[in-house]
Image 1: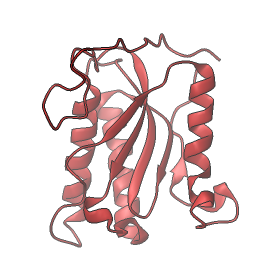
Image 2: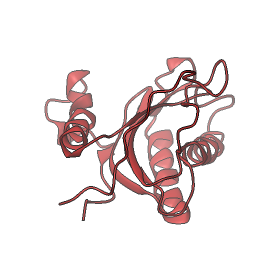
Image 3: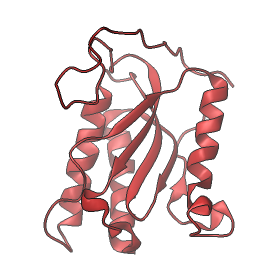
Image 4: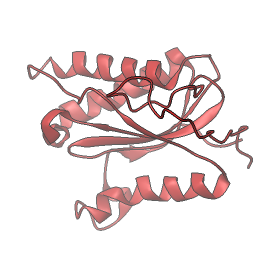
Length: 167
C-alpha cells in the first residue's frame, strides 16, 4: 500500500486567510493530499442519534464522493460530530468545496425532519503527513464510538466505515 504524494505544510507568518478562518494562508487545499476532517453539529446537538438523520447524512457523503471524485478512507458519524479521512485533489476540488457541499447537501436532507442549522459554520482539518499518521488516524476514527462509551466493540457502531482503500 502506498499513499498518494503527501506534501508538508510550510510555516507561514500569518496563519489564517481571514481573522476567523481555520484555513492556512497560502496552503493549496486542492492538491493531492489526505486530510483528517472534523465537522461539528450546530450547538453540539446530538442529532445523529436520530437514525434517519444519520443514515441520510451518510447517503449524502456517498453521493458527493461519486459526484466530486474524492476518496473516503474512513468515516465515523458520532451523535454530535463527524470525522472523516478524505483524499482530495483527484478532481481539482478543494477541501473547503467538498466539506461545504457535504454540509449543504446533508442539511437539506436534515430539513425533511427538522428546521434550522445542522452544522457549525467551520470545520477542522489536519493534513496527514505520512503512512504512520494515516493509520493512526484511521484507528482514532474507528475507535471513537468505543472511547465515548457508545459501544463495546468498534464494529458495533452502525455509522463507522470506509468507502475507499489505499492502492
